[in-house]
Amino acid sequence: MYSRFLLLLTTLFFIPQNVYAMSVSEYVDKYFAPFSDAFSNIVFTPVKICGVSVPVIIMFLIVSSIIFTIYLRFIGIWGFKHSLSRLFGKYHKEHEQDHDGEVSSLGAFATALSGTVGLGNIAGVAIAISIGGPGAMFWMIFGAMCGMASKFLECTLAVKYRRFNPDGSVSGGPMFYIAHGLTRKGLRWLGQPLALLFALMCVPGALGGGNMLQINQATQQMISITGGQDSFFAAHSWAFGLIVALIVGLIIVGGIKSIANVTSKIVPVMCGIYLIAALAIIVMNYHQIPHAIATVLKEAFFPQSVVGGIVGTIIIGFRRSVQSNEAGSGSAPIAYAAVKTKEPISQGFVSLMEPFLDTVVICSLTASVIIITGEYLNYREGITGVQLTSAAFAGTFSFFPYVLAVVIILFAISTIISWAYYGQKAWSYIFGEGFKRTKVYQVMFCIFIVIGSCMNLQSIVDFTDSTMLAMAAPNLIAIFILLPEIKRDLVEYCKKYKIINAMNKVWFKDEKTL
Image (cartoon, rainbow, N blue to C red; front, side, top):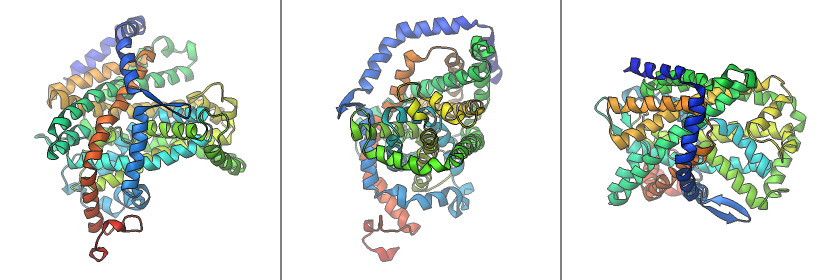
C-alpha cells in the first residue's frame, strides 16, 4: 500500500505546473465557487451590532463561551493549577500506562495544540490590531479565558463517549458524544443527524482550512525567502507541496501515536523559536512597555477610529480569539479522545491549557511586538497580516523574515498533521472503520497538499472557513444539552481530588465530605 502511495505522489512530479495552476483553479472557480459562495453566505449570515457586521455563528461561539464560563464558575481560573498538575505534575505520572487509550495526556495535548497554533497566531493577531486597534488584544485575551470553559466541556465529553475499536485504536470526538450522548437523553432523532452534519463539515474543513490553506501560505513564504519570482519554487510550487506531502504521508500512516510523537517534538521547537524572538524584541524595547500597556487598556475601553466603538473592538477581539484557539468548534476533542485515562474530567482540565497557551501567551506576544514597536500605526490603512508581523520584527532584527518563514512552515506542517487526523476520524464516522477506507482518505489528503501548494485558493477560502466554523453549531447544541451531566461529573471529581475554593465550593452541600 505504501509503495502505491509513494508512486501516486511521485507521478505528480511529471504533471506540468500549468495543469495545476490553471485547470484545477479554473474548474473550482467555474463549478465549485457558486456552491461555495452560497454555503458561505448561509454560515456567515451577519447581524449588525453598533454598526459592526458579525456572523451569527461567531456570536453563537462567543455567547456560548461566556455562558459556559459563568456556569462552571470561571473554571479557567480555579482549575488552572490542577490543569498544570494533570499535564506535568504528580497526576501526570500516576498510572497512564495502565489505562486504555493510545497516547499520553501530553501527547494528546501536543496534537491538539499543534492544530490550533498556526497562522492565526501570526497573521490573525495582526489583522485584529489593524482593524480593531491595540484594544483588540485585551478582548482577545478575555475571549480566550472564556474559551477555556468551552474547551473543557467538549474535551471531557470526547473522552467520556469515545469508542474503542477491535484493533485497540480509539475513535472519539463530537460525532460520538453528539450521537450517543443525545441518544441517552432520548434525543436520538436529533443526535444522529447533528453528528453526521458535524462529520460532513469536518472532512472538507480538514482538506481545505486544515490543509490547502496552510500549505499555500507556507509555500508563499518559501518562495519569498528563496528569491521571490526568481525562486525555483515560484515556477514549481508543486515541488514544495510534494515534499511536504511525502513528509506528512509518512507521519499520518502511523496513526495518532505517530502524530503525537511528532507534534510533541515540533510544538516545543516552533513555539520556542517564536517566543524567544518575541521576548527579545520586548526586552530590547522595555522602555515602551508601560506605554504599550496603557495604550491597550485605553483602546480596549475608549477606542479611537474603530467602527462600532468599544463594541466593535470587543467583537473583533473575540472573533480573532475564537478563530485562533477554535474553542467550541469541536476539532481538538478528536485528538483528546485518544488519551490514556479513565477519568474524562481529568483530560478536560488538561485542555484548559490549550486556549491559554495559544491565545493568552502566543497571540499576546505577537500583539505586544506589533504594539511596542509602533508598527501598527504605519499599517492602519496599509499592509496587514503576516507582513505586518514580519515588519514589526524586522525593525529590530533584519533577518527575522527568514526566521518567520521557518516558524510559519513548522506551524503549517504541524497544523496539517493534526487536521489530517481530525478529518480521518470524521471520514471513518461517515464511511466506517477499515484499513482500505483509511488509506483512501490519507492518499486523498496528501494529494490535496500538492494541489493546495500551487493553486489560487481564493475561491475556496470562504468555503473552508465556513465548514470549520459550521462544525461549531451541532457541537455547541450538544454541549448545552449535556451540560448538567458534565457538571455532576465535575463535582464528583472535585470531591475525589479535594479541589475546593471560593469559586466552586457552593456546588457542595456538605463541605465536610471533602
